[in-house]
Image (cartoon, rainbow, N blue to C red; front, side, top):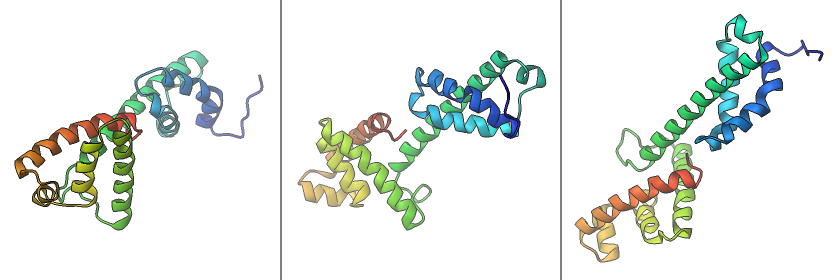
Length: 173
């Protein structure tokens, strides 16, 4: 087999092993992040290449790349979970700072809420929509729904838990 030496070393590795890495990752818990993890691994390999003894042996190189890709996939999954948690935290530390971030947050939340509504959690989805997309206070929601504020707070807590569970299923992370 003739190697293409016009590509940088790390790109040659991924031309040879990339599809195999994606297939290997799709069988694990981080399947949704397989392609992104392989891309991150390519960047990591360019910045921090493996030792020469690993890089010269194709199977050892694949094993090294697979370990790095699995770690990257786990990192991506953790980052997405933190992001889902931050979406439901209305304090100023995590609030979007500009219209683009606000629109992105609303689109992500909307996608998960739509999934919740389809799967039978429409009451929880509507409550979260009022609180986080329409930005009503608990007392305003209480008046709208004709329910005591403490009941609204309790329902919001349960709805947040449902949202976090649905986040993974709906493709948020």
